[in-house]
Image (cartoon, rainbow over all chains, first blue to last red):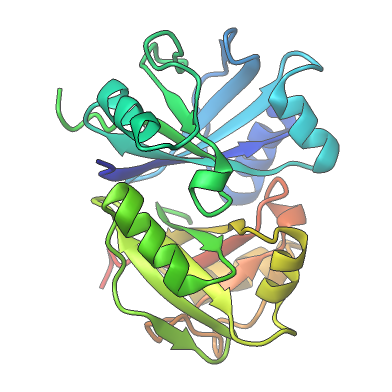
Length: 138
Length: 138
């Protein structure tokens, strides 16, 4: 079902400032800033050898990320993302098993245009989990 | 400096129950339960193809993990861990640059006996970051 730890996502109040901090303090270079209009976030990725750190900031005060930042003003770890060979089938199976799947992967997309879904934290030990293609079965 | 996303760590109130849930719901198999006396936790790892999910529960009510669980009773993402070729040199350099390094990697050990340190969340976008050997430069 899940094959990889695809990324860890950190919500930040100021994306450009976060990118600058990671570069200056740790030499971690983020890729280009992109916007996911559907998810209401601006984002960038730091590519490590085996996985990515996602940085995101909200584009609207009503987004879930904005509400997370109200509780965590300086930012914090928002979710982890697990890779799977087949997002739609995995989400359907988990929903059929009684898990609360957030968003329909037939229409919900990441910034790369790939299908994604989320698992409610109550179904994964209190952790919000994104489900994305693992890129290993193209 | 940092080369890999080594693991994501989830603090849970009941380690055995957490292991059983991941196995039953997602087919994710955890390795053996181990105890890190120094860190005051029982823990187990789920090995994915590229990285690990760490599960941990406190062995004492005074541990930082116990305090995290008071704020997050059902559990939650506690930290991420970044791999580096040289933990001691990296921690020393970051401390010299003004970062708040938590614990001395000359004496602080993970359950594998490897040197580790932590970066205070204020130094990494609100995220608690463990620093561990990346295992790529033995």
